[in-house]
Length: 188
Image (cartoon, rainbow, N blue to C red; front, side, top):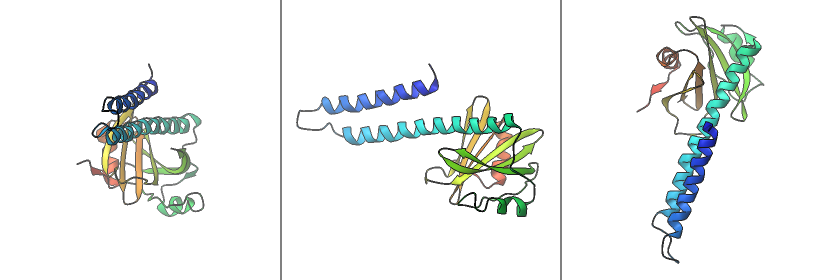
């Protein structure tokens, strides 16, 4: 059974559990917390569901760039070349600069989570790192979160009103070194 199928099954079970709680109450009385519990279950399951699809989207974008050989649309490590290149392509301006041990190779515009995002491309000891940047739509993603998908490490965090997602085949500790230089805060 695929992860997507398992997640869909869990979501269906959550819906059924909410319906069972409501049905098991007295005929005219909703079960205490049944509606709120069902909404909370939907919210948690929906967030898990969307994060799973987002992780798959990130892997797909990263692998697509690696396979095509077109890692960048603008190849430069110069902030004053890369940052203005995004003007007119995105409705925000990502910080694009090299960091100690992580030189900026360039950038591209990619499509992740149903919107255009900035993809900053870094290298570290022959590994390619994509850092996807987009406006944050949630206040819940302030801390650094870690996950893996298909052998890739994925880190996610927010700085100000921008959301960052880094993906690479690097181990989590090495990738976190870049994230911290990009101002990621550890999850509390």
